[in-house]
Length: 231
Length: 113
Image (cartoon, rainbow over all chains, first blue to last red; front, side, top):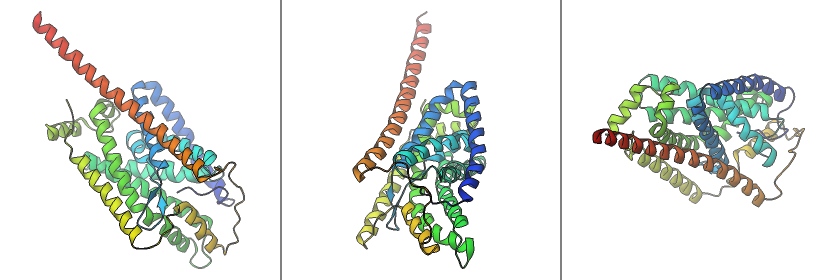
């Protein structure tokens, strides 16, 4: 989903910066407040950030004969919401832009918006809706992380389509062309990311369900249900 | 008390990963593919859409000098992430065990008194 350095023309790169910066600023503010209020969230924050680090470093082959990478942002979105997750994503995106020539500094605003904001927002909403509807906790996590991953790549396709509308067919035709590259490649990757995130979430629930309950991520009832199922 | 300690989720995830590998093996065996990155393929689409007219107006401030150096930096990224995850999950696990042990010791102590 990295839009390469220099590949977003004026005014698009500025627009995406303008949209991402306020979210990032609020994310930093929320993160600081959360850490100050409850130190116990700090290890989970580190784990969620590290999870983005690991997953976004893995370029995986897909059924389309090309490679792409998962995002790892689903976990952060579920536990901390999209604001704070945008800060986790920007750390990885800057590292990759500076050291790996993946993405870029001029396209950072757009890449933060897709991977750090749009994807996590979708993941967060899906998780809230699914877990509230009484769906099994791990299935909710799977769906949220899978769709967060996929939404990230659809957002990238849209960003590129807006910047490069086709001569005939305009933005929509362009979107189809970019989505043909990103969206189909991403389907199996997104599913694997969802599964791995669900597993990771299971281990966190096993070890620190108390913190997750206090943060309103999982309900007391859901934890009790999992406990019964395991007994 | 352990929660959801059954191995069913692990089995499902393992199954999905195996399916993923099988899909890769099948794709690889049925044609010649470049396995290039989707990010760079998007560059191709941009070139098609603009008739090759678009020139990136800024280039990366640093590019890994070779594929080896690039994979070093990617591996470093994964290693740092794994280290942090492993450290905290291990820390939590040991804490839970220590708490359980001291709780048991306290109960035993009360029985003796």
